[in-house]
Length: 394
Image 1 (tube, one colour):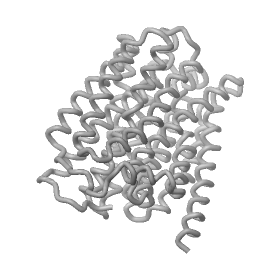
Image 2 (image 1 turned 30 degrees about the horizontal axis):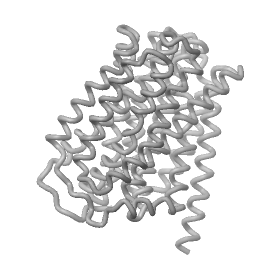
Image 3 (image 1 turned 180 degrees about the horizontal axis):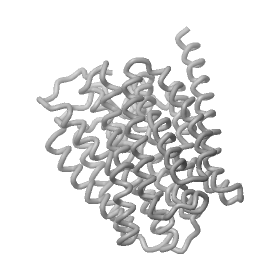
Image 4 (image 1 turned 90 degrees about the vertical axis):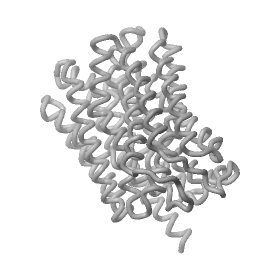
């Protein structure tokens, strides 16, 4: 989809940079809960699998908030909507830093998740519109790079802050980045009027689009494997691999490096051939989980395996965003935002299944095998989506 309206002069690299800072903020906040899961569990006197429910609550907040806020904001100027969403996000994470019981932590994580999907959805639409048809996948991948760079810099730093000064410091850091994002968007993103045809009714009509739902299902299932491993990377490394807790931030940074590189490579490939890229991501991630399951006994091979998982799985987010833009018709904001609902269903599903297999005494590597099953399931759903699409166009 290309822009059909004029905007004031702008620098596309600065626009993408400003939007990516928001992705950095959100990525840091979402994933630091995983890096600090042991500290949070100890402070709030809950078990590690129970602390996984805080991760699930955030993901469910994303799932609920993305369609609601995208539909309600259909007629709003996109810059104003982005600013409002990021302000909401910063305040919500300050609330998390003040949580003093499992109940308030659960509630605060749910609230913090509400603007997540809508922010990424609207940011992706802005990037795709301004970049044009032949560079839109790369532009969206660059916006998403803020999310993945968070795993190289933001999450390890926030994890270190949490380990050194208490887990609340990690969320205070995220609230500060939200303020920086507001300033960056204010100065760098041009004012873009909503499309003349945009309406709540047309966005709601997207709920009837079977191609959109199947595409979302690919992400909701196929991306879950990354979270089944990432959510429990810290205890896997310390309890199974035998690594020091101080190795965890380094391992998360390596994991994030794989995510950054993999996301950019997938975006570049998707601009050339979208469907082949989706297949390649799902197949390669399946092999990555098999390799990882066999590599967790030693520290260095375990860290290399985490890099491989990050590299292969992460590209799915950007490429499915482009597929959604293509199949969504006039429900662009809804589809783009629901992409992140799907990935946070994957987050919730992965965290839940990973915690479940651990609690069933199936071993610390069991979440890795869960990842394999979920990637293969995502591949099967994509095959179904292509079949349905062919029948509709045939």
